[in-house]
Length: 256
Image (cartoon, rainbow, N blue to C red; front, side, top):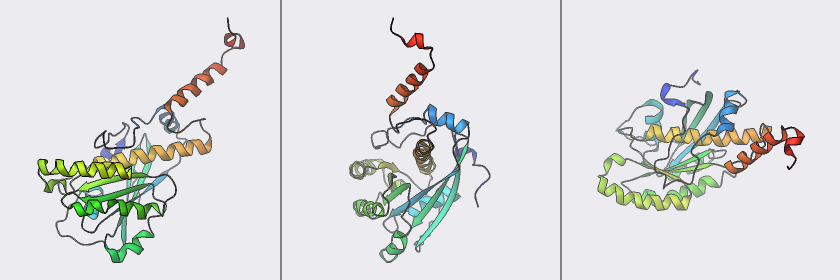
């Protein structure tokens, strides 16, 4: 059942930063005036973004989802059978926006079942265990499998779970390898701990903001609310200036 209103910590009005500005392919740093104005006028429809969480068995996918959705952590590991999903509400720039989070099984025998739910994903979250380098090595394969079911635009996140298990010195070594993998995958990198909750809420807030902006821009373009060129602030400013010029009396447009 969808919530009537998002919790205070899920009210997004300020652009959330990445885990590291050096480990993300997504360079946006604000919602932009066009989106803010459109949201203020309530011209966008209610949206649900589909997020799939994939990765090897026992890397911490279910713990990640449970920590975010239920603020719980369970030490007793139980493998996910097939798929499970949660729906969580955000209010972004005053508009309701939901993340439909699909937690998929990592066991080989459930891959065929889980793969059938990959289609239509707006966000692909590939999870690995920072204490298990083999799970990091498998991340590209997981992304390849999910990509085969998705031809449209989507965001990619590489998430290192169980960060609390490593010392700072050991983690720094793992992070270098993870950052290189993220670059090859064209993914944004995050390291989190579901046990302590460190980074989990920030990760999903970032996911919500990025996918909201992408979907809002596509909707604005399809409805032709503004003659925009997605991703080009230079073009937006130029078009806005030209629009202002058209409003001037003819004599002001004539050269002196």
